[in-house]
Image 1 (cartoon, rainbow, N blue to C red):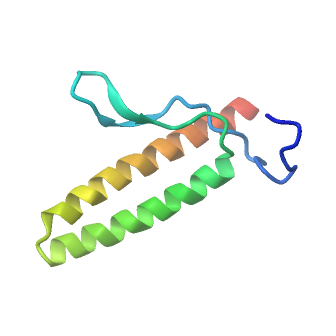
Image 2 (image 1 turned 45 degrees about the vertical axis):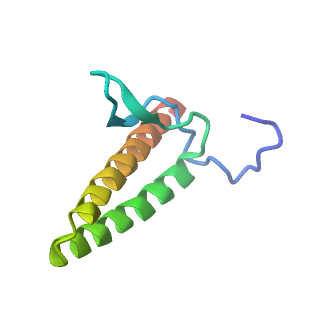
Length: 95
């Protein structure tokens, strides 16, 4: 990474930019991909925030019969999974 990156950034490693999410129109193509070079620590923190938002949207969507919130929960969960998968690959590439 950059020489001016602080030491405390990226203790766990860096994202590799392989994981993707949300199916595209073309079979086998995804709409979004995790950007390589982000610190895994931050990626995992953001995945936690996304999962908490997904949990809340899912609960409210089911309780209030709001399908759009259930779909939002689905998309947020896919994004969180991509972040966690990519961070996991970055952790293993550090070893």
